[in-house]
Each structure stands twice: as C-alpha cells, then as structure tokens.
Image (cartoon, rainbow, N blue to C red; front, side, top):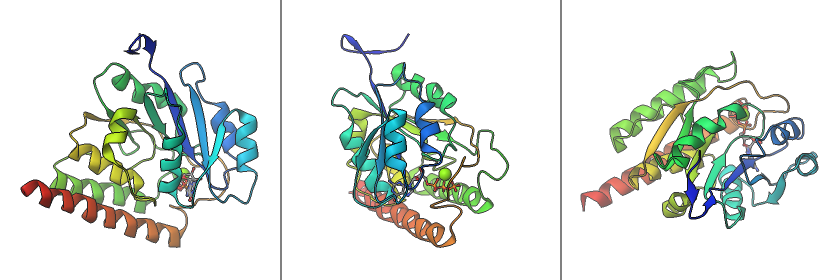
Length: 242
Ligand SMILES: Nc1nc2c(ncn2[C@@H]2O[C@H](COP(=O)(O)OP(=O)(O)OP(=O)(O)O)[C@@H](O)[C@H]2O)c(=O)[nH]1
Ligand SMILES: [Mg+2]
C-alpha cells in the first residue's frame, strides 16, 4: 500500500519536543502507531519533572538538546535513524490527535507531497483548545504569508510531516518558537509540494502550557514569529528579485 524507498518500505521517525510534560508524555508515546513508525524520539531540554523517565518507560528514545523549542526540534531531526525517510513533528501534551497521523503521511508515502501540515483551523477543535489570540495569529500570519510568499496556509500548528531529503534541503536555523513558521516559509521558497490537511485538536491532557497559556511566553513567541516572517520571508524575496 505504501511507497517503497528502493527495496524497503519508507521509515518514519516521530519527533516530540517536550518540556515538563511528565503528566502527558507517557500517554502520547504509548498511543503511537508502532506498526507504522520506526521510532519515537522525545527531545527534552531542562525539564524539572520526570518527562525523560516517563517517555523512556513508554517506549520513546529520549535525546537532549540546548534550550528552546526549535533547538529541540532540530536535535530530534538530527538524531533520527539514518534510515528514516520521513520526519513527523507533534507536541507532547496530548493536544494533537495521533489518529490523524496517516492522513499526514499518506500523501508523502504516495509521492504526492514532500511536506504535509495539519491545520487545526480547518479541523475540529475542542472548545478552549486554541485561544482566540492563537486563532487570530493563525489568520494574521496566513494573510501575511499569502501576501509575501504567495503560499496558502491557515495555521502554524506543530503537527506535520516532511520528507527527510526535503528537510535537509531547507537548512533550518531558527532555534525558538519561530521554528514551525520557518519550515513553512522555507518549504514554499524551495518549491516543495506542500499539502495542508485538517487535523483535530484538543486541550492539553495535563501539565502547564509553555506557550499559548502563558502571557510572557506568548509575547516572546509572537515576536519570534514576526521576526522569522520578515527575516526569512523578505530576505529570500529580495534575493529572488536578483
Ligand atoms: N524540549 C522542549 N520542548 C518544549 C519547549 N517549549 C515547549 N516545548 C514543548 O513544545 C510543545 C508545545 O508547547 P505547549 O506548551 O503545548 O504550547 P501550546 O500548545 O501553545 O500551549 P497549550 O495550548 O497550553 O498546549 C509541548 O510538547 C512542550 O512541552 C522547550 O523549550 N524545549
Ligand atoms: Mg500544546
């Protein structure tokens, strides 16, 4: 059913950045479709709770990285098995719905896309799972991306899958909460085949919000997102003008 890489089936690595997610990470890792994926990597950097131990006990490979969300995503990507063909990213708080994973993988496995991104805006959201400010940010950034990059996204959610060879092409460098957006902009700039698909979303199943529910962190994330939008987006546009 799935595409082959040479003579073998394509291999999938799931990468989960997790900071103080001991309450949820065990459930998230245990819910993985183990017959479909080759490995689940949990990237931890500075948790003060038992995130690493719980994740290991649930079957994940735990790696550590310097501080920061993008740093964790990058470290997880670099730690993926050398034989992995597709990298999947999702959150460790149980908000992403693992049943949506095949929907993100299928177009890549069928060689119809290089990058698939879940849109919570287009999916079904549990009430309260996204704050009004997050929904506004998703619409606002989508509008700017359409204007600056000519690409249509509706969200900047974490749940996504990318062909590993395409990921390598992007040269990801943003080590903060701007990581997700940088990937989206660079995917467009590198002319990847991008497919946005609806995914469902629920409230985190335990623990504390590191971003959306924390005013200071949200403001910092907003600044980083805007910075990435203008630094990565405008710079490449100017270069393209030659
Ligand atoms: N390793 C690592 N993980 C992080 C860091 N910051 C956030 N995360 C993880 O990134 C994911 C997203 O963070 P959340 O706190 O869920 O952010 P959010 O989804 O905007 O907020 P909620 O709506 O409350 O869930 C979670 O799995 C976090 O544990 C970090 O600095 N390092
Ligand atoms: Mg969350």
